[in-house]
Image 1 (cartoon, rainbow, N blue to C red):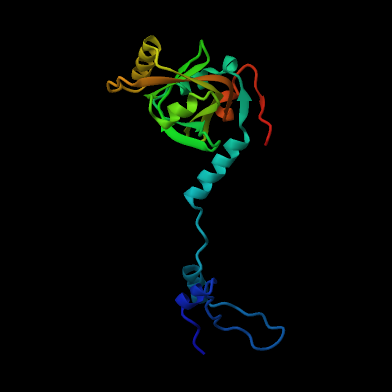
Image 2 (tube, rainbow, N blue to C red):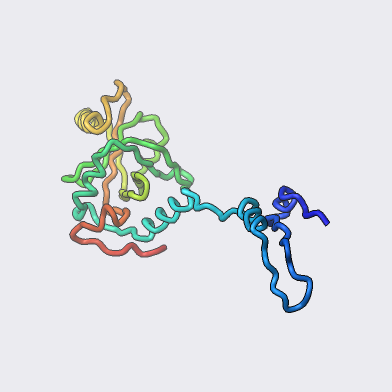
Length: 211
């Protein structure tokens, strides 16, 4: 009897196993495989290769499990350098109904004042959300390295504050376009979460409680 085609067997969720040439028909006699059967099985049922995505996800999960929490006073040199790199972040604010609003933004970090600044148009939803003064989070990440800056928000259109926000943004990213209705979202940071690779060298950190 002819063995089913390989494509048919694969469609049933199993590899097609070639017939064993020279198999014994009497009890107690050991079946021997012919070399051609071994080769056929290698071709039809190759070992499952390791996928790069699997490795990446495993490393990311391992990094996340090593997350730590800190305060702005205890940021390590690695964390401060990370906060000056030319990278974007996500900004999470709360809408009036309490649902999260998450958008990508550029921001700058003021270590002396523990203040993150986001420049934006005064009519934007993120500015209107932040003006209510609720909780706010900035999260910057690069592969397995990440930092979340948690705090409360204020919004200002004071010319001096806007000019400083623009100057700091230009130093980190590029000169923004002129916008007469620009405001600055100020994130007053009280807690920092992040990957151990960035925060662990800090002087005072503790493992982040799972929740």
